[in-house]
Length: 318
Image 1 (cartoon, one colour):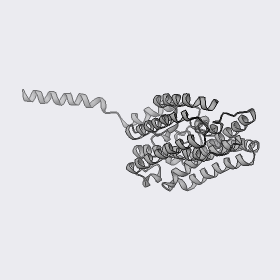
Image 2 (cartoon, helix red, strand yellow):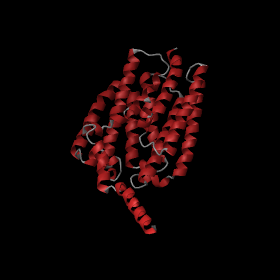
Image 3 (tube, rainbow, N blue to C red):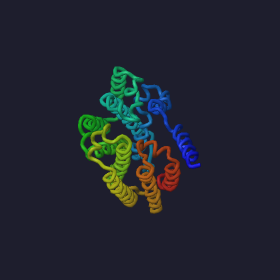
Image 4 (cartoon, helix red, strand yellow):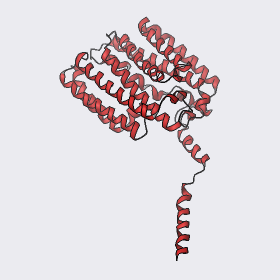
């Protein structure tokens, strides 16, 4: 009886374990098949999924609600220039990091790393983007053009050296977002609101640090050498610090610079909830690898953003 039971148990164990054994080759091919064919390689190289980063920052210059056709055209041109500039940066980064990307579980699916696009085609794409950027800078004028060129210079320095120096690397990336914001204000001919600048900087640090934490947990320090200077505990601490600074800056922006009524302070609750939700995604769920998708696809975030906009809209339209 004992022998029969032991035999049955062993067989049962074998039956349970067998389906779980999936060949490593099949595991690596499955995600690739799912990802291939979503976008043509030349378009995927530009990373259009990252363009909302510009949409979320540059048009903040229009928050006061005083709009005219000339201002909209200037801000739209600045937006287009930053989209071209950011795509150019992405292409140059992919060219420089193609070998490192091949060893990353997600980035190996990019056009260059996966072999869907050749190096020569990528270089031609970069030249075309640079050529398209020139007339946009001429239309913008000296002030906005200088900010776009500064954005390119900062990202060039980041790709060359600064991305390997923690924690300077995250501040350099966040500076790119601040330059977008300043570019929007310059194009709109509006005075810069410094509490909003601080809020954008701190919020971007939260998103970037969340991405670093995800990268550290998924691929370790092999793909990004700067991750050697981080640990999960350290990242959790600075995430909380930057989240507090984001909320504090947003509160002071509403009170001192926005020109909104007192009821706009209710949106601080939405800001606090958004920070809670993002930290939950990063720390509890192990997400945050793609902040743009997190902000634009997470249902909880979207509902919170809708409530935020509904509370803020009357003050913008007033």
